[in-house]
Image 1 (cartoon, rainbow, N blue to C red):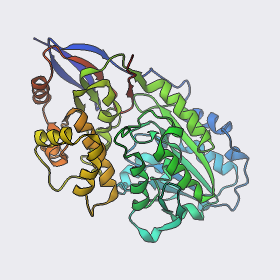
Image 2 (image 1 turned 60 degrees about the vertical axis):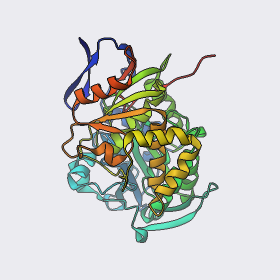
Image 3 (image 1 turned 90 degrees about the horizontal axis):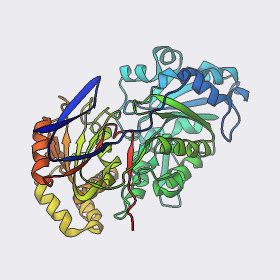
Length: 443
């Protein structure tokens, strides 16, 4: 006999059958949050009372150049539903449409397609304003601003330097290396050069603390570095960040100073999506919803909930990956899963980075930090990934070199059952893409 669970999957659900002897400790969901007004109204209210900054509508922006930086297609933020409120503020302040430009913060992601930009901005704003996508590999479109105290050379999109005012529009959500996304992350890595992005991400490469999810800004070395680098711009920067619920629907906005307002957003999101686990389980089932855009975003659900599992336990990630792979590097050569895991257990956590650096020699630095994070997870846990996306290779786990992958739920369950105790304890995270697990050992 089996018991079953259901988790969100696109517009429907996916059902998993679990062995009858397994003990489900619980299905951990974030607080149910709902906005009492429309997104336009909620955003307008926050814009009218910004944190630590002058209201946009109260400024004199006549003849001033304004750059509105918006998160890209890989993020579920429904920007089109509240961006008009931001534009209304700018118009009230005297900013003309000819002097306002929109920049999609793609970092080193691919360029957003026209249909994706239309979905992100809305057809009217897309038609009314000049817009473009950042290219982190275009050296001609970048300017060097200096080097941070942590050694990151800061190359940023030249459009940022041409602007009198920069408005950052995105969301605050759990982030594996930053603790929480949003804030000045829209500039680094969002509008930075590939070299800057790679070096900044390497700040989170630490064998003892490789996973910073849920860490507040003042404790994340990557957050410290990017904020220092972004502020080298010495420009007026105004933040518009949405805090979203488990369905990626904004429920509150944080506007104003890009650091002060962001810190307030962190605390709000933490209260909503941090899920305390009283004990670690043998098995964790975690679903990528609502971060389903591609594999790079989807597999973050595993990192988000990693500490809900016992060391040596099994992580099963349901990674919908609507657009396929995304900008995730694939190893040119990989070892068989059991061999790779055995090697990692043998060498220990402090020798993982030298192993990755040797394997990724002459590769872009971002492949090093991604490889390090992935191998540290594999060293700690068994990792299985399920996806039914037709845009992913059926053997994607082998190509990634860090997981077993499955295109059928039943096959993944059989694999997990072969490795778990017969009466395995289980935590389930239906919204693992937007929540994270927190465990504090007792005693």
